[in-house]
Image (cartoon, rainbow, N blue to C red; front, side):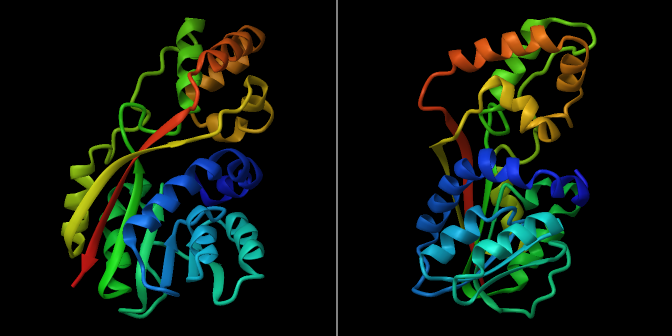
Length: 262
């Protein structure tokens, strides 16, 4: 997605993606076990799942994201809190001094940077003081994304339309194995790397919300675009049935991987 595209997703992202992300962010903060009022960097912060949670614990938070819309929303949320702010910045080239923070986090963020992923993680390591923490949260298999993709894929496959094809899991295969993320942190310069697979509840929108609120997010998937373009009514009928079949609580699965800076 382009930065401009993310600007269009702020409201939908905050409503449907952030609640689940916030629970994983809280788990990452728990594992990091930071000292009181730590200096925290949140990379690819979005609307603030980690940043707001860390600020709520009394930490000083510097949140960055490449999308202006996300940063504008997050800056407004952080403005009442002391020593917390957000700004537009490229994760691959952090405008920050070496050894500036006690910890750097990225929740469902830097591991989507493709060939530049190691560069971004290395930047996180660079700006954290010796002894500090670098922590990354990323989706795990078998889905490789948030739980909302489960009924979506099932509905597309039940539709069985040639235009839509079939949607299989994982949604993305990069870094779903936590050993890959552990190795990435080692290559970026971390030691004492450890990881955990965690499950947390995530919200599930009603079928019509996929079209009215989440369309800009899921439309990046050509299977969905074809289904909603050519078979809208039938697809929504199937999707409503699949959403209703989801077992509760609806759990997302993610790996939390952290290391220490030397």
